[in-house]
Length: 351
Ligand code: UDP
Ligand code: MG
Image 1 (cartoon, rainbow, N blue to C red):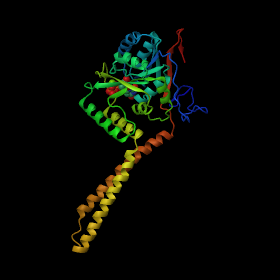
Image 2 (cartoon, rainbow, N blue to C red; image 1 turned 120 degrees about the vertical axis):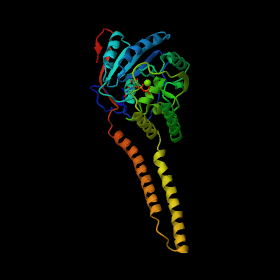
Image 3 (spheres, protein in one colour; image 1 turned 90 degrees about the horizontal axis):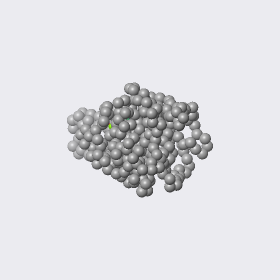
């Protein structure tokens, strides 16, 4: 048992000695050769009409891959429409589909984490429910994996289906993030990828509650290759990630993987102090040489306002980090599972 990040039914968020969220030596074990069990992890949030399309699209593709057994872990992330009902219908008719019902909407990152924790495959592929990540390239991912890659990234060679604003802000985010952080998140790579069991087990050892998955995926490392694809428009429904959510997501990414915004204030402060020193000296010399002139309220006010606002910004930056420390110290689980819906061989639902 190693589920440091979520709370499952009847399971306490405590750990037995030696299995805790802080292993002393996180060693990833490489497994034997028989690799044939693939888990797809799919977060669903108000994707009602998308469920059927997803099922219809994914099954034929997975079935035609030779030598593969698969399961689909569908996470219902507190949907308010009929998503859960449709998911249960699918799971009832197809025992390869398991449904994880979260107790409320926890957001995509938490939903993914819960699905990854529940997945049992030798390799795990997180994929969006809206079919924007084309299932047709799953065979390519598996091929690379069989050749020995531990992580196979699906790289979006074309994001024309996203709006101009989304493309530009995404580009800016990646550039800023990678400049500030030591963990370089590959550009135009989403959560859609294949991860070997060793990668997943390492990922599960990361105890943080606020999970910027793209950063964590990169942080764990491992032998990585990538495959390109063209991102398509959504099949049904509309995007669940508003501009405000994406902005918070970007802040999450940067503050999770970089302390540069904290350190930069030392330099800004030093430069300001140096500037103030020279300016002060200049005024002193000028007063000695030319005597007192008309007092300048304007320059005084401007400098006070300027320094004041710099201080407010830096307090705000400190606040961002302290807020995150506060949330982490509470040690709340990333998600709560209300129920796992799964059909066993004899037709009875388990758990
Ligand atoms: N999603 C989720 N919880 C949320 C928001 C989104 O599980 O709070 C799921 C959503 O159902 C979809 C995936 O995350 O399967 C990607 O969401 P979306 O398509 O809205 O994002 P976009 O493709 O616009 O970036
Ligand atoms: Mg989408």
